[in-house]
Figure (cartoon, rainbow, N blue to C red):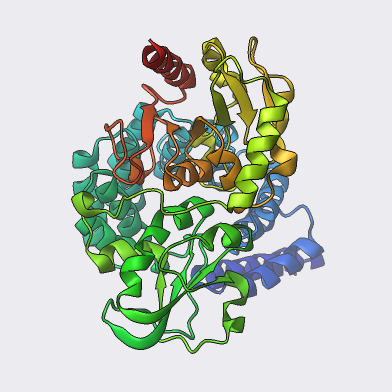
Length: 500
């Protein structure tokens, strides 16, 4: 006769199988309830802890998932699947070094594990070790030839290396195998845009709304999407879907939209509303979170980054006349007076604004941001006066600048984008990584030098040193992943050449 302990174990096993079945069927919340009961009754059940961790991660709580899987590993460290899933979560948290370590542990236990090689490829790409990332993805495919996600990872790693012509056929194979794979369509769109194939790229880019991992604000379901046809007498809602830089870049299309309707209302994040008041073609600016309080019966809504497709503007016809934004004149006057008092500019020195870090929540911020210390070569620019336009925690780096660089922090008085625009308008040059101030300076028509990572965002394309979006911008690219010093060495040399 079975003992009570044996009956309890049998019941626990049945419940665990039921949780796994529910999870596989896409009923994650139901699976979590079943699994949580097992863990409550048996806190040391490694299999239940591991499954619950995977479920919590799938439901969007990566931190809880990691904690649970770590507890599972404490009780059972020799299961390679535990380390594999731990690496997957660490990749999502962008803790890539730790993800590689977890992959190494899993491979030590199971050397022919394709899922681990896929996670390893993802982690290595996050670290900028692109050749190794490609090799890991190819290893996953060799172990499991029909592994669609590994093909997707391979294509993304090739794209990151700039090998677009190799990446695109692989994206095509992924989409042929999974026609509704929105993530593959979206990544293919980025590859096409990076290659300058804008017409195809913008069509594919519409898949972003079907990709669950796309982080930006969805347009309101209550308002139909605009098809590009005239809406005489109607009001169109322009939807600022993404970050401040994207809003600044694509609001340039508002005058073209205005030709197709009676009124244009622009919905954006609160901190950029003041700046957008100067945007041509816009009749009213509203808070995106409270757009429905505008008192308008909108005929249609159009996300800003859908406008290049709807307006049909290839590279040669991008509306690129600048400035198309401006700061309030009284703010510009105030900033001009402020900066004239903080430095002695009678020697003819240049006022240079610096930005070295972007939004840490951006998926690629670990590649596109640098440290103020990386900008050390700029200290050699004779007669330069530096101002930190940096906001957030990285602004504190200005308190310990590189040798020879004197820099004044402005973060405490910058406020919103309109105030930043006023400050930028008084400076001779902006040196920045790929973040919103780069777009702002370009839209204001101010000289701006943008430092780009080895794998740049699509809008800067692959090799050009200028930008079709901003005539006043120069692009300086990393020669290899993470090689920031060379970027700023070239900037210092370029500045010396201009002075000469």
